[in-house]
View 1 (cartoon, rainbow, N blue to C red):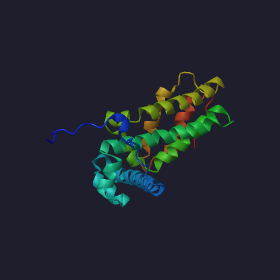
View 2 (view 1 turned 180 degrees about the horizontal axis):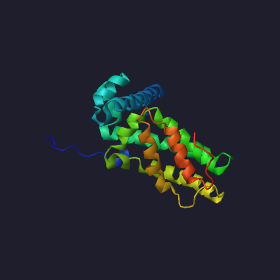
View 3 (view 1 turned 45 degrees about the vertical axis):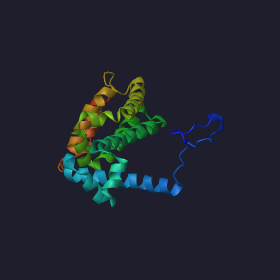
View 4 (view 1 turned 45 degrees about the horizontal axis):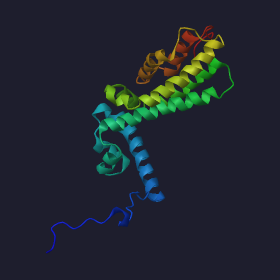
Length: 213
C-alpha cells in the first residue's frame, strides 16, 4: 500500500540548500546606479518646474525611463523627496568636512562653507523651495544625515567662537532660520542673495567688515 505521506529524508542525508543570492553583474549594478542618478537629477528639474504638484510620471519622462523604473528605486513620491533632502544635507556635510580640514581664519572658513552651500542651492532654488514645503515625515527620512551635518557645522562654529571672531550666542540651531531667509531671497531675481548672506554674516562677526558687497 502506497502511503499518503512520503517518509521524510533524514536531515543528515539531505543535500545542502544554497540560500545565497547571486550578486548582480557589475554592468547591471552600474546601470541601476546611473538610472538612480538620472531620476534624482530629473526630480530636481521637475520639482523646480511644478513644485510639490510634481508627479512620478513627470520625473520618468525627464529621466528618459519608464515610470516603473522610478517606482523600483523610489516606491513613493515621499521616498523620492526624502532622498533629495538627504542629498542636500549630505552636500552641506561634505562642504563642512572640507572646511574643517582648512587652515584659514575660522570665521572666514565658516563663511566660505555657507557661500558654497548657497551657490549649490541657487542652481535649483525652486526645487529647494518645494522640499521646504514637504511634510515632516519626508524630512524624517534624512534625520541621520541631518544630525551628522549639524555636528560638523557646530564644529566650524565652535572654532570661530574660540578664535573670538564669532558672537558667542550663535549655534547650529540658528542655521535653519538663517539659511531659509537666504534661500527665500533666491526666488526674487531683483534681490541679491549674496548681499543678503553678507549682511547676515556681518551680524555674526564680532568685528563686522566695513561694508557688505
